[in-house]
Amino acid sequence: MEKVSIYPNNKVTQGLIRFRELLNIEIKSVIDFVFDVGKDAQEILDGEKSGIMIMNEVDEALEGVDTLLLNEEGTPLAHFQDFYFENELDKKWRLVVETAFNKGKKIISSHNIYSKKTLDWLSEKKIKIDFPEPIEKENIEKKYFENLKNDYKTKNMTRIGIYGTRSCIGKFTTQQMLFKELRKKRKVKTIITEPTAFLFKDTYPLYSTIPLSQYENTAYLRKLVEEEDKNETEYFIFSDQGSVVLDFGLGWYMTKLSYLKGFHPDKVIIIADYRDDEVLEKMITFFKVFSNIDKPMAVLIPDRVEKEYGIYEKKTEEEMKQRKKEIKEKFNISTVEIIRDIDKVAQTILN
Image (tube, rainbow, N blue to C red):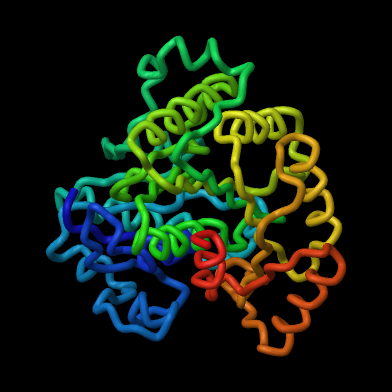
């Protein structure tokens, strides 16, 4: 996999476009049938042209590539089913996949495919889709399980955990922006929990789509922390999925606690939405109770929020200024910034 076309133009794909210099692939095109067709995929994010165009002509988009990367699994998430079926995106997913298959392109999906209907269709068409390699459990040595009762004290390294009050709020963007800032002056590594982690250089994957057990999560993270500390990595950055305090059942909480126990951050950054004061308060309490973090070193806010699938509301300068003021006063947090101003947070960390 060297030259890639990606379907569709969703937030996962936009994360790859935004940080494509950190990837081990070359993105040649993006396929989409709804959003920003005919536009430059980078320009819609930050105004900079990349030459990577968003196309709805599948044959054209697949020219000169060896791989089709799928960043959704052909079935909708619960919160945008109406949109998905109104735009016949299930049929269009199949069109993209079958066209790539007929052209002899390798097909990789960053997400697992669970739908029996979709799996039956793939089987009928004899289409093979590859998935990211799972983390090898046998590579997690026994000693990391035996030492879990004691927290590991790093000698050279600061562990930074990035968490959010909800999904789709900018945790991964914050992680990668902070990584780019800190590595200008220091040795930095990341642990990526996005399903596209396998596409990034100089990182470790912890796939939420290919989960280890809770104990294996903890041991795997402990292994990475100890190894990178011995390698004299100065900053290790972990970004979580979803939120640590939203109620998705016992399994969700256990997984979040396993991440926290294994990584054991020294500093915490929380990304907060504009209407999430209650969740933010719970998160601050969560870290007080379950870690040695008395309060987050910083709270960051996005400059745009997703209102519907693929539809974003840009916040005005006044709205962002007011939200920063609210968080500082209500939660007594001294460092409150917009995600795009991550350089200010990086300077605080370095100092």
